[in-house]
Amino acid sequence: MIPKNHINPVYSQDFINFFSIEHLLLKVQFLIKNFIKKNTIIKNIIIMLMIFLLSSIFAFSISLQAGEAADFYESSNVRFYYEEGNFYLNLTTPAPVLCAVNFAEMGEKYNNLTAMDMISPGVNHLVELDLEPDKIYQVKLTAFTEAHEIYRSQEYLVDTGIDNETDDLIVIQEGEKSEECEKGEQDQEVQEVQEGQEGQKGQEGQEGEEGQEVQEGQEDQEIQESQARTIELAAADDEFSQVPEIEGVTDTGASINFSTKNPTLSSTAFGTTEEFGRLVRAPGRIPAESHEVSLPGLQADTEYSLETIVIDESGKLLRSGISTFTTAESEEEVDYGENHATLEAGAEIYAVSSNFGNDLTGPFGAVNAIDGDPGSEWSSQGEGDEAWIEIKLAESREITGFGFWSRTMGDTGEIRRLKVITGEGEILGEFDIPDAERLYNFTLPPTKTQNVRFEVVNSTGGNTGAREIRIYGEAN
Image (cartoon, rainbow, N blue to C red):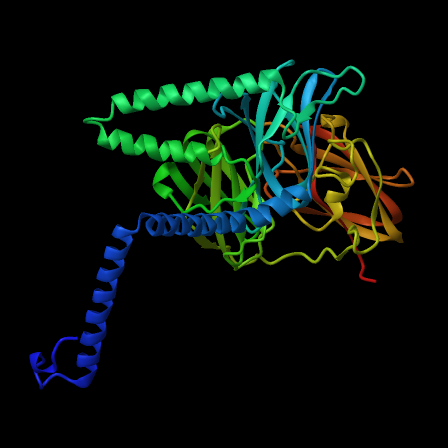
């Protein structure tokens, strides 16, 4: 203790106590350091305890990150298979998501990216993979939720040796690696050592480049993690060639345009809060640098928040900042009556020409046309002008109009003209659909019927279909 006569008496007692305690702690710290220096065993035990503590903290943080993602993929059904000359991933998820697939030959860095050609989230994903037979591939999935969380899967090792009896791909489980797989891992280790040596040689005088290489290495390493995890991603608008810009705002929709430095696939989340709730992306399964994304089914005079995440062929992710916009005020609308073509009202799909994926309730099934959600859609199986859909109402009633919102795939998939026919075969007319930007409503001569059939007369070809179909009549 410092003698009290060394303390200026004008200082408060609180200051005296603080000063004394501080001095005592310094003295204890000094004694502990001397004790540790003289006792190597104690020193080693303390170091081991510190390492254990740090490892535990790290493992706990990783487990928190992995929790939701691990549960998501454990609840998913993941199947790789071969059919009629093509390789596929069939993924069923516990919640609607947009999903991207990165893959590469074993021992190489991830260099391929694809997805199902869908513009809205779904639970059934059928993804065609450009794989070659008799090779080992490493595959990782990245799912984007409607709250814009990012779930990255564990790594799947896929042997494309085709089993003639089952035509299934063999997913190599842990502890079952083939000789080719082990060789691939050895080659990758040699490559990493060589890259490390080369990087060391060029270290001097290249501090700026070295920092960038380290950052890129960390980003590439993200996709090398062996377990599923949730990825936390900060906004980085400066990494976009053009940040997302909101255009063409109306009372029911808007669009955004943006571009990236490398070919990417995108996911745009939007909603009335920053928790979002809806997802869209540009049509197509091939990565691109320029993106144009439509935001359909918006409410008039409402503020929306949105953000965009992109992923490239290496698995690197970029997130934009959150932006906001307000839709236009609603124009005065004609009262067409009540919509009876909804699942909630008891309507059903009586018949359909086809569904992409051959599933009536799948991500492109016909029921999406009457589910009340313009974010989902029905797509035919490449039928173009030959596509048709027939809706059965809950009961026979007098109908007075209909609404139709065509799907589009950009250059294809858009219906330009359709014919409306009752279940009794009466043609109610042919109608032009100006574009696929929104729902268009039409009046019909009052007609009593239970079934209404819509036939494509003219289109841009391909997987034609509809986002939403309505059939109007008097209220119940």
